Figure 1 (cartoon, rainbow over the protein chains, first blue to last red):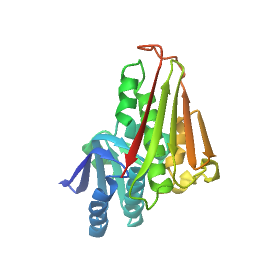
Figure 2 (cartoon, each protein chain N blue to C red):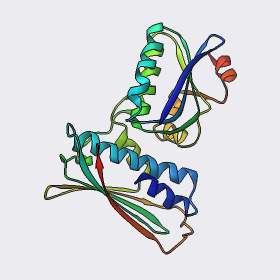
Figure 3 (cartoon, rainbow over the protein chains, first blue to last red):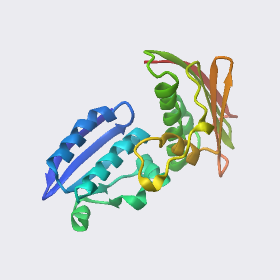
Length: 111
Length: 135
């Protein structure tokens, strides 16, 4: 099961993701990602403290958001990722590509 | 079946990292069967056998869909941040061995994980088998 919500933290657009982001649930979050990209925001944070499991489809969705926001001249920070999702990011070498921080305030300081 | 696997691992002395590896590989292998072997099919059967000992875990997936030899799949260039083709990368990076065989009309994908430290087993080892109708 996946749940997500979008909100503003100062000038950062935060997408908070909870539950499982996998091949079954990625289609649910794709429109939200499209909306974020369409608005042209340049500071995006993915808040993942309650994300339990991610698979390759979920990673693909995050990489897609990352590349498109970067393509606009912006950046995506990964906030409070832990457990299995953190391990998958490490295994795929994405800890080097993504800026991973502990809190939204840390993310704000690094844009 | 993933619940059975999770419960089996919870009954042993495992690490969060080991659990993350095994659950990730299981999910990716199962998704590959649904998405590739049974592509376009409304349903399909996957038989799964899990054998856990103190030194290793073996998971076999048996389906009757289109063959999908993992050795024929090229590794994507991770530096280019690919959005697809990461499932096998995950499986290969967390499991000790992967074997694919086509036997008659069946595909048999076997994954094995050797444990760095032997598990303290709740019993002398265990085996589970089930078939799952996937929609």
